[in-house]
Length: 219
Length: 219
Image (cartoon, each protein chain N blue to C red):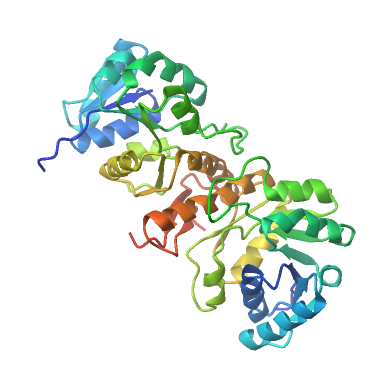
């Protein structure tokens, strides 16, 4: 492998989903930077992740510094914090790829989100100089931490930029997931909504591991 | 089997999807009634289906007569005709189960539908005396006609009525599909939207058989 892997910053990287994704990328040889509003929390999470992943490359920084150091920025904050977090680093995101994992589904009252896709809202805020990709919205955080376990759910990658879509499919595969390009950003609304259906099915069939798989594409 | 199978009327039963579903139910021993606005067209379709399915039980009737003769009514008309068709048989649907397969996705410009789920709109129109179930929104019509072929896509069944949901899962299984209860009617909006993603993936991966499978439920 002579190709240089992009550096990945994860905003909300101290949360379960961010940590799980970061662990898998760090093990796959990517340089991972955990972003947090508090630099100390980020540094602490990075130390724990280095131990868990058996690497020394994970670094923890305040969100702005994390964005500046990365080519790809992954957002795994709670839905309520999506817009404020993006606004806080908006100027620094120029020229980069933003991977938005926001799924606005309330686990206590799961229903499909209304209005625009989260990724579309991010793209509208950030403008055409940032390539927004919606992905990882319904990856179960607990399964991410089991590094050797294959995930039950495939990743559907939506973006208006075909090149960025392909790159993020590669990131998902590097993290041990099956991933598929699934059209433009607006389609991300459906992927967010799938979370509500997965919760409903898990409840109905008394499972914790329900997921979606893509079939029949021949790839 | 001593249990009596419900009689199924299919409105829009002369179309590809209705015909495909009807063939599979007829072969499974259900009494199937093809409904159409024109009784002659319905009768003609029924004759062809009896030949294809190797049965003599399929009957063709004008929509109102079809609804009256059935316990379960399946709606497979184009999205534009959904509301008008339901209004034309509204009073006759009382006490019955309506299975709404409407997916408002334009194949030439596929995008997730906005607003309410089709099934929710049907339920609002018909009121609480009709149990509406959303299902079969993204079953590929061409695959339905290949009676021996397992379908690439699972059926997600959404309804506010748990008993009706279970019954429709049984109908899907009788037609040779894997099916899962996936929560209330509002979740049907996501299932409709999946059609847009499947189209996008088929286009991207040069396939015609892309579909969704549910995994990890242990059933």
